Length: 106
Image (cartoon, rainbow, N blue to C red; front, side, top):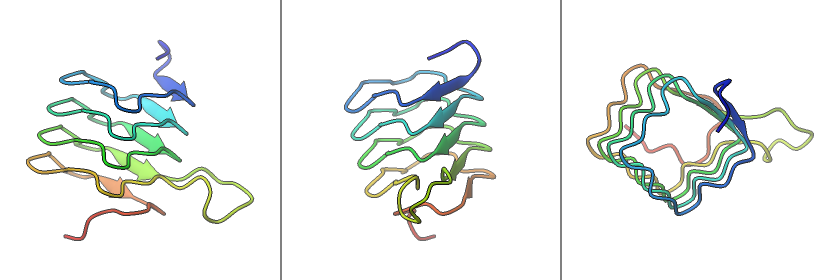
């Protein structure tokens, strides 16, 4: 990650990132498939066009996090995908989602 708080096209797939602190970080087109983020602090993070399929966010603090998309020529490409993400006991206060694939129903 960069000191600027902006990370683009990084591969975290399958990584053990617990209990890391990524507060305020912006992730654009990053791969978190199957990553273990249990108990991580993700307060104010922005995920744009990122892949979080099957990521484990149990107990993570996602307060003020945003899950959104990256504008592209294709309506489907550039959308954040959270299909199968595990959110049990995660703090979801003020989380926003816009054009996200797989966000669990309330």
